[in-house]
Image 1 (cartoon, rainbow, N blue to C red):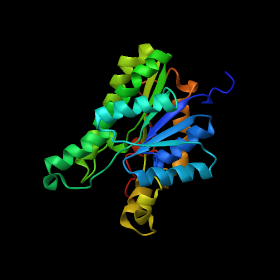
Image 2: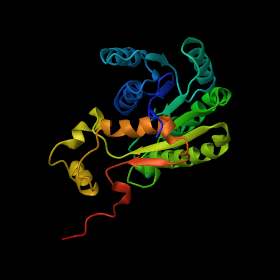
Image 3: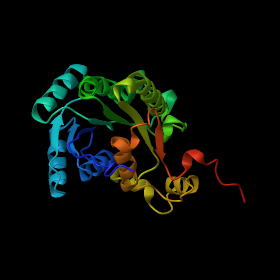
Image 4: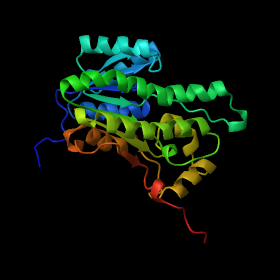
Length: 261
């Protein structure tokens, strides 16, 4: 095997929404393998806070404030990143939202907002970085998909529609851009320990019991569980992996559920 096949030295990685949580964990993992990290957020205060966290870990990250759904703004900032840092080699489309609203109560505007951020955003970002990757001779795009790319659940119709669409966008862009040595893949996280899920992970909480029972590994995932898969899909190790969704879910997708006792 080629030496250092998982190293990312000299590569520039843009991770959207990497000011906390899964995005930040992935960005730090890419940095630990040698990548230069660029990230964005909608709010200046989130970028500033994240910069301190990266610096505390010895990571020289550069943050920008822009909206992934605004095509003109994205084009402007991709050029700005090119001028200030360099051409992007790795894009991780992590920015996203979820609205837990029953379908009968969800407005079309709320539905469109989720679709815009979770599906249109990755399309706009991928389209913006692809020309630079093509000119450079290749690149990696990693879309953060979801279990809802494959499974349905109550109250998340817009999110599931967006993430299901993102799965197919991943496959289609892989088909279109493979000839340019661009690999487009996805990661489908299971239920992960983050500050947002902390209230649900209390022992005895019905949702906590549900997740532990539904996951063959019988635990919540950790952000560290996503680090290896992200580095793999960002590195030369995955040069012939394309259009694939890698589920990091403790086995949920493979599991029908426990047989009643």
